[in-house]
Length: 108
Image (cartoon, rainbow, N blue to C red):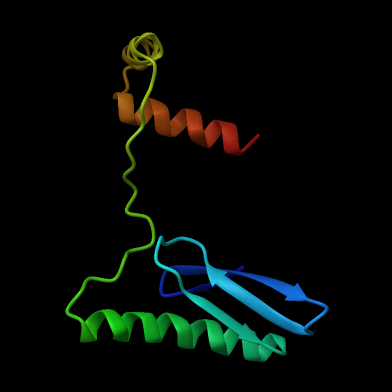
């Protein structure tokens, strides 16, 4: 995993083409890169992110930020009620309770 300016790149090796190729995975915009060596793929990743940011600037557009920390969640109304009650019983906000539940689940 490569990280640069908050953007995260995932790299795979194509043994048929003998090349590394990658994609930025924490944005909906498509940012890809490739290289024949580890040094090349790292350089190409940084250049692709910089090119993306420059492209957005040229067009007077805000680049998509890697994860804002906000997402919408749709729940069954009964589950929503149960989570709300559990949060209140633990003297937490609904947001805090859900964040803690997710942290607990991914750290298992």
